[in-house]
Length: 187
Image 1: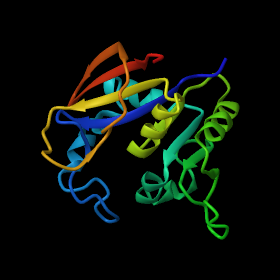
Image 2: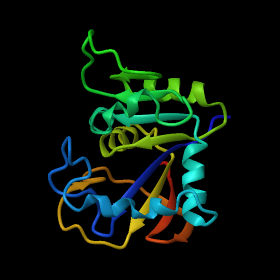
Image 3: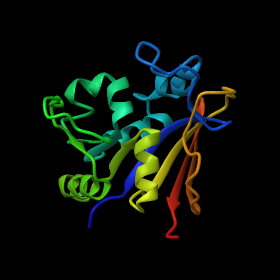
């Protein structure tokens, strides 16, 4: 049995995953860096360290093209050499992604290849575009939301128009974030 496709996403209380004007050189937008202060504890023994360790225990990554590019293509290695699957609308023949990254235009093929690569480990999902595409295709199993007590007021939203029923399956309180895990219910 394969592990779940699980979105890992830091989000403000008002629903933003990046501040306004997220672009190269300002990847998290104005004020968006605050969403990741909880990672200061990622190497520690507490809750934030546990969550970070769980993310690094995943067996593959699925991300959207925008996230991949803003992250500098992770220099071809997101963590531990796991395969990186990038959802995109178009693939240029001369654009060869680095390391273990592969481009996909089809959600189902992307997820099937990621599942084949992970064994029973979870798949880490990054980016609003990838999350929305997987949710719309019925391929997103869980959401791990790192809810940060800040109001950004504007920026990039995680979800805009994809209704879904969710079941809260875990709440963990960490420093600078409450980690909420939801199961996406069949609908």
